[in-house]
Image 1 (tube, protein in one colour):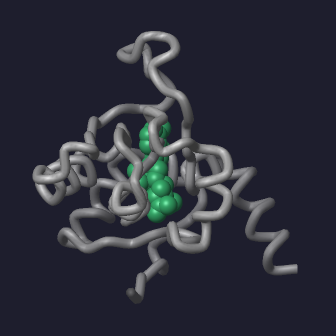
Image 2 (cartoon, protein in one colour):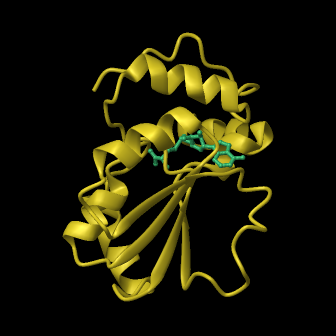
Image 3 (cartoon, protein in one colour):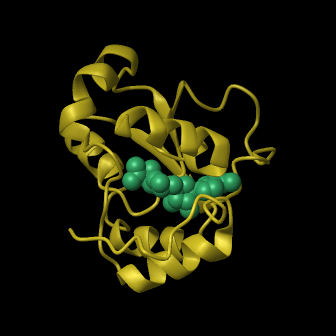
Length: 143
Ligand SMILES: C[S@@+](CC[C@H](N)C(=O)[O-])C[C@H]1O[C@@H](n2cnc3c(N)ncnc32)[C@H](O)[C@@H]1O
């Protein structure tokens, strides 16, 4: 899927309004940043048991969680700061009980009691929340 990144800079990646606008523009499409589940599967299967209750932070509109359920994962709570992404995904996957979606800022997860999850997966969220990390990442892959 082609993605127009001309309006992106590293300064608004931490802003919910930026992501809302972006997901609105994508009109229900799906996009996995960096890698699809098929590439990450060896690592995920090694460290995350299929019976684990998984927290997927900054899920966006990626297919990652859907693909994990197809691969046997039983319980994935997906959170994202973008209410647009969460509403879209909730509607899209209402027929898959293993997938749950909640709008939430990862910086305040007091909603969940301690020990709620066996594993947490972050694919590309922290990198974008902290511009310095993102700049260093881009520099390292481009040099
Ligand atoms: C680069 S995208 C990655 C999306 C998805 N994980 C993937 O691999 O395609 C970063 C995601 O993190 C979300 N995000 C940014 N800041 C967040 C925060 N403070 N709390 C929760 N989600 C956040 C954005 O809305 C966006 O969906």
